[in-house]
Image (cartoon, rainbow, N blue to C red; front, top):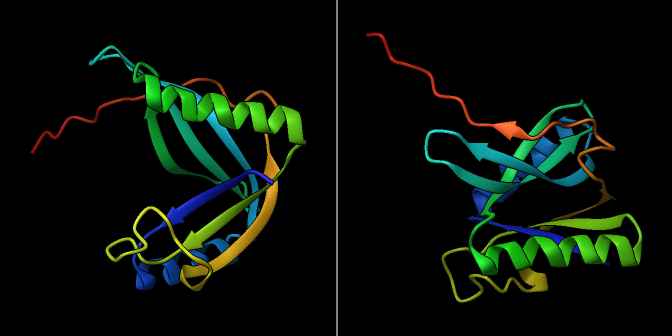
Length: 135
């Protein structure tokens, strides 16, 4: 089953799990296109949709970086080939020996959810906007 792993420190992982539970869990995972018109860059934005209807950014991949683009292509291939069921794993150990390779002992929570397309979630491509500080 395809999985998204969010690895952070143990205190932050516990806080994230609590926030996701309070938001009625994870309803969907999606990679949506995005762009920064000022820097003329394109991105793949990894989003979690929680049960309360909110979207949360968990990763940003450059559309022009070949390695990062392959990660998104692999995700889409898994989604198409294996169905829409997937996991979101929240793990600790980001600063220790398990950095980038969390073990079962590092797992704080597992959420079973569905992988969705931006169209299924009615998400347009996102565009970065800048707020001016007038102070």
